[in-house]
Length: 216
Image 1 (tube, rainbow, N blue to C red):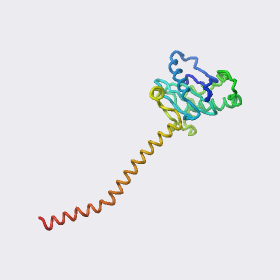
Image 2: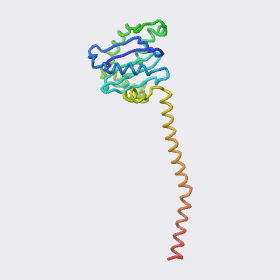
Image 3: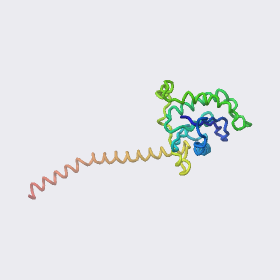
Image 4: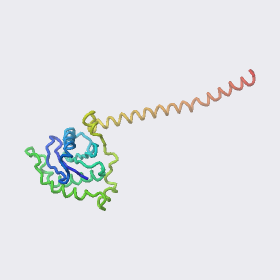
């Protein structure tokens, strides 16, 4: 289930549109909407373009596109693939409707609150994951979420983890570098074994023959 959705301008974190599920008790979501604000505060143009942040019974999924942050709170059981397809659909419609206005410097918070109508309509389409339309989206190869970064909210907010693309790329490169160093050491060791094993084997046979012939 999609519980809430917010659209924010990346550069100054100005909220442009938002929508919540009227059937959801907002007091239950208070903690997670606070987390959402902290996540938004950490995001920038250099952040990973899409990621999932796990937090108890909910997940925060965000998409950065066209200078905007689209972020949604979903129940943990809701498929990530559908969540990101939903955000992509919002981005297409929002840019089509308001793309020429999003960079205006005099915009007020929630200047495009009427976009809530489209958000609510789209949420209803994505609500039931078992409909044939949504099953087709789940089976589609167009939305590959296997490479989408996943973080834990505790690591992100309290242990200093970053959503920055370059930081995560650097960490990945360090991990890959370490892996290749280990592989290189193993290759060198295997090569040394192949090079010297025959010599060692021949030496042992020679010693054994000397012992057998002369020292028995």
